[in-house]
Each structure stands twice: as C-alpha cells, then as structure tokens.
Amino acid sequence: MDIKVNSVNFTADQKLITFVNDKVNKLQLFFDNIIASEVFLRVDKDQEKENKLAEIKILIPGKELFAKKQCKTFEEATDLAVEALRRQVRKHKGKLVD
Image (cartoon, rainbow, N blue to C red; front, side, top):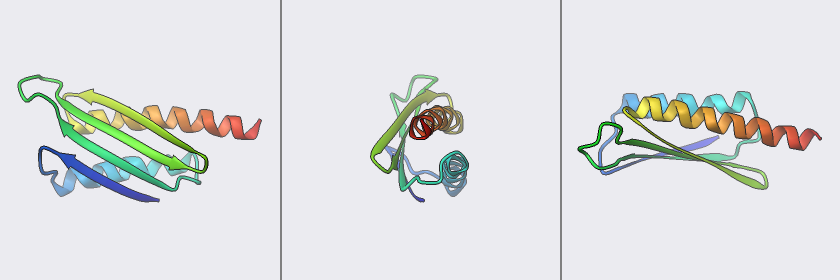
C-alpha cells in the first residue's frame, strides 16, 4: 500500500510520520485490497486545546473511505481515525461477502 503523509501548517518529525505509517499499515490486516492512503495532519486554531486534526483517506477497488478526527495530540487523532476506518473496512468487506 502506498501511504502519503502530508503535514499542513507545521513540519512533522520522523517519529510522528513513522507512527502514522504503522497505524495505517495495520488496516491491511483487515482488508488486503487497499490500494493507497493519504493522511493529512493539520493544526487547527493554535489557542484551542484539541487542535490536532487527522484526516485519512484510503482507496480500495470501487470505493474511497474517509475518516476525520480532532484531538489533543496527532497520535490520539490518528488512532481514532484508523479505528473509524477499520469499522468502515469491515463493513465494506461484509457487503462483498454477502
């Protein structure tokens, strides 16, 4: 799977990029036909406490799945977005089996 990580309004360090790549790669355990994914990490309004935004889009044959979460840290937002995508992937996979 091809993963692109984009950081908007800040420069992401290698540790954060590695964390995001590892989390998104785990989606392949649930569905191995994922073609590519694109991750946007964004800082929203600096004075707010929960200002870290993670948006993840994955491409699978015939469909595009998307999740967006906002939290205190990028790691937490990424975890929640990946979990939301995991549910979407399992639901999609269930429809394919039926």
